[in-house]
Image 1 (cartoon, rainbow, N blue to C red):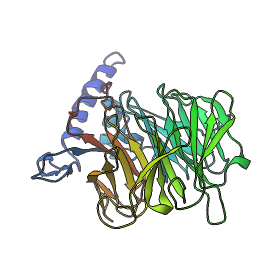
Image 2 (cartoon, rainbow, N blue to C red):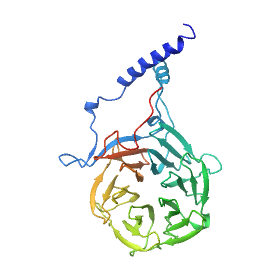
Image 3 (cartoon, rainbow, N blue to C red):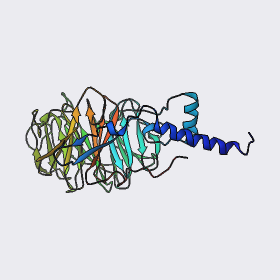
Image 4 (spheres, rainbow, N blue to C red):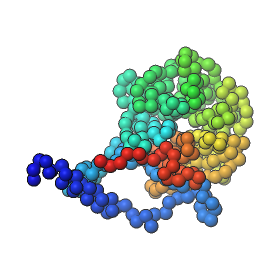
Amino acid sequence: MTKTSSPFILHLLGTLVFLMVGCAGSTPDMAEVVIPVFPEPPDEPRFYYERTIVSSVDIEIESRESAFERFVTGSQRTGVGMAKPFGVAVHQGRVFVSDSISRQVFAFDVPEARFFEIGIRNPGQLVKPMGVAVDARGNLYVCDATLKQVMMYDRDGKFLQQFGEPRMFDRPAGLAVDPDGQRIFVVDTGGVASERHQVSVIDTATGNLLRTIARRGDKEGELNLPRDATIAPDGNLYIVDGGNFRVQVFTQQGDFVRSFGEVGRRSGQFSRPKGIGADRDGNIYVADTAFGNFQIFDPQGRLLLAVGRRDANYGPASFMLPAGLAVDEDGRVYMVDQFFRKVDVFRPASLTKDQGWLVTKVKPE
């Protein structure tokens, strides 16, 4: 074999093996796969389970040469996986997932089939990243529970600046940011001995604390062990009031608007609410760790649908310890499960598989 013919032959063999690998292996016959749909038939579908992200393998496209090498050696494809994912945020098909054990944020870029890590070195090194959020430009904001600060990166993971200081927080966990990136809303979970069950609002231009929203209590406008927050299209701040088993709504200036939810085991109630997100229609999505699902409410707090199920067996739309939740620009929903170390993605029925940002643009080499 000459050196000039070797690349062509290797490419040809790689192509053949790539096709063989794609047709064989452990992938089940699609005719036997039941794709979870919500609600279940005979009701009209509103959400489909679409995919699961566990590691870089689920995003990066394997080259034909690599597939050929694995075929020859019999090796398994490996990637960088998550240890204890917590929060999730999405911008134009790029999925950011914080991992409190790995001490970083994983970036899974589906359109570019690209994976990279954020916060693994200084400046901007993370210790215990929890809540994450993005602004309209794709800048990433990460709440670090150990540093008790918010770290800001550009869309590609370059560290830009940090906000807050340890004396401002007790147990910062959740995070929201306004679309323009002018204000950061840091959810302080507090604790048994803490009175800081509140949301701190930081001005990104100056880094100053503008105000705190709420105080500890169980009355309207008071919080007990708040978990997460999101800004809905109406401009209001929706806060998961975990210890009071409800969602409370405030203006960004801190004025109480309304609340919905109560403790219970029935649909529309909460047991251990955690992550929260909002779609462009103003519907509110709340992950519940005890239920193993997320519930969808209209802006007034009326239940629309529950998606997912609690299950000790790993599988699509099955959860044991759901945490963070995000809704992207197209209405896809992303929910983190800490027990199974994954992110499940759900597609609204109004969207086809090839529509929206979460579509891979690149092809195998």
